[in-house]
Length: 356
Image 1: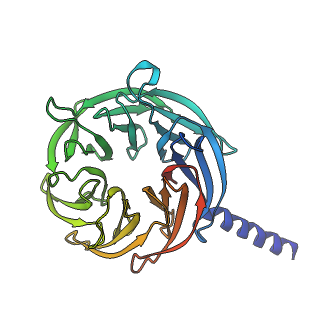
Image 2: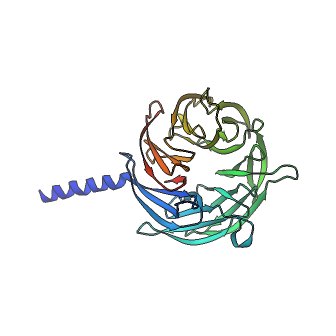
Image 3: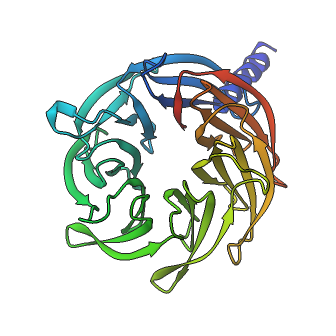
């Protein structure tokens, strides 16, 4: 009997532990925030508990986690790192107790780094520098720390100020959204660097901010900060065309708005976007054959200025970082309809990025 009970206890313990994931929270530190925080998140119940400051850092506004979960990378919003007129990025080792230990720090080679992305192998990192109008590529050491800069691309023109906002890898390609140039730019790795192969313009004054790709990169969805729209890009041969644009806003909304973040559901049936100003999350049903979007819901973010959001590890919940109201809102996802139901929120100082 003792053996049976012990076995049941071990199984239950393993099940509970398997449901708990670490949520990393980056944010601004000009208020109550001190750096990078973590929460314990139960992907079965949606419980978000045990906030902990794991690393003091200067404005870690965007984070990305290595594929093996052993390293955390952070962009800091400093614009004069070591008198270089640039921001900085840092890598942190995840210790056994959950604390973070900085193992490298380097210039971002541009002002106001605002977005980071790793390739699938985790051996390359790209940072987008909003004010500098550049993106910078780095090699990653096998132990996880940032190694050396391998390429810096300046997107500024004499007549146009670039504002590089996000970049993502796909196989041997790199896609970059630039709000100032109003384009999504495609690069291909040739010889020893990424070379521009296509520039896809958005509607005038759209301001592309973030974007998401389907698993096969046949479709790319770009959320436009100024335009209050999502642009659908479709692959035709080796190039992309902008197929259409849909509004992220309620039809009768007339106030200010600045779109922010965008994510696909794991099954790619639904697309989610955040509206800062209207302070909502918009939900679209996605036609998986032709990529078209149909709006199915607009719901309050239950906070102010939803800069970033993420889906839980099992796709059951959506969590929103509301920067100005200092809280994280948790929503239950109906996997059949894609619609959200607000559950509750927790306090968090100036949250700007959520990563599992």
